[in-house]
Image (cartoon, rainbow, N blue to C red; front, side, top):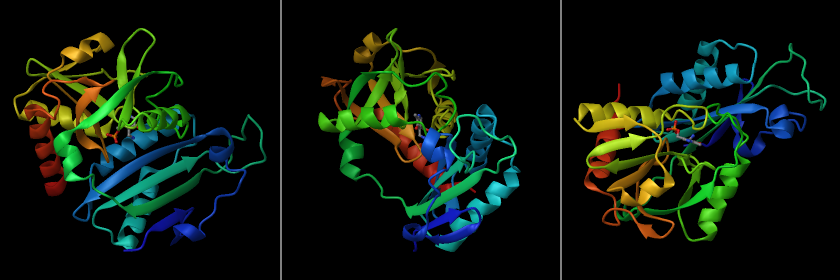
Amino acid sequence: MPELAYLNGKIRPISETYVPIEDRGYQFGDAVYEFIASYNGKLFCMEEHMKRLQTSMEGLSFPKIDKSFIEKAVYELFEKAKIARAGIYIQISRGVAPRDHAWDKKMKVQIIMTIKEVKEYPLKLREDGIGIITVQDERWANCNIKTVQILFNAMAKQKAKDQGAFDAIFISKDGIVREGTSSNFFMIKDGCLITHPLTKNILPGITRMVIMDLARDLGIKTEEKFILKTDLFSANEAFLSGTITEILGVRTIDGIKIGKGKPGEITQKLYKALRKKAEQDI
Ligand code: PMP
């Protein structure tokens, strides 16, 4: 099960793959990315991830790349690595050029990928739930575009870790709960599943979308609306969602117990449904 890297058509071990220092992704954060997971040797929601990647590239006015070209490259790497439970990181930068803020519109994008085995979270973490903290959202204004400019997300995650919490959620200066550092946020109140609407302030999570569909199938009421920080503490349940996170139930927010202080019934039901869908998806 080798862990491999892809760089502009060439597949090699990760440790032997290098990106030129004048890659605009490295110097300007001028790159977009995706992270796709596989279950039982099958990539989950490939189509949706490819679509979002295209949208992100459009958002930064990258030249058009044929969707099937990227798809073929992803499958080539996936088939070569033969990792059944894989995580594929895809990063596309505007390209390599002498450092200059403006760019030559004819430059060629640079595609890199890595494939590694996904390390599942311990069962205990899923059963006990996670502690999260709130931090003020100081990210840029286009969080719907999945760029590699995620320094503030990294800083918030580190702050959470330093405080003994698992993760952080961003709160706007008006007190609106946005999302996690690498996840979307959901809360459940009186049986209704509530999450932030799709605006420029959050990433349109693929897992978020799958969960909303699953909830409707399960007869759970859903609502997309702004949640205020002050609403958090009356939630019956809360969880984070993402490709690797899947669904992680929240135990506490800023040290205050949410619901019964462990992942609730609806959270667990949705997690089971999500795993089932991912593992059986054809
Ligand atoms: N929000 C942010 C900021 C993220 O980084 C991620 C993970 N990439 C998500 C939400 C969840 O997205 P997805 O379900 O597509 O992994």
